[in-house]
Length: 99
Image (cartoon, rainbow, N blue to C red; front, side, top):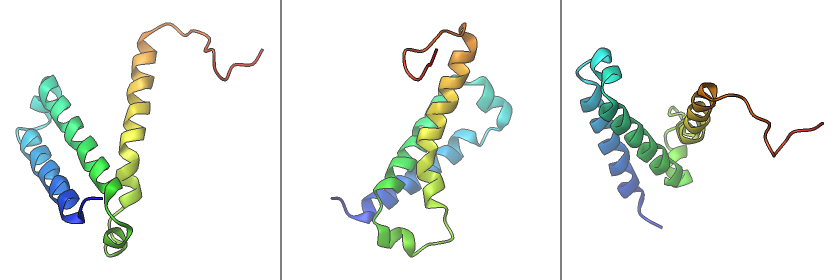
């Protein structure tokens, strides 16, 4: 298990990179897939690092919504899956369908 300082550094680095990537404004961000990919990747890194922080580190800062941050990765994947499936014709799933 790594020391919390390693994860805190990853979190701060990710935040700094995201701030840099969005600094040119919304239009530039939305028009540039590389920027979007970079921000998404840093959000994933941030989320994973928060997930790996120790409980004492998280409880010492109750003002931060740790659970919401760690849920990002799962929620984002669901959102992307819904967008992708909206582009394709609906098909019956082999899981979870009942006749």
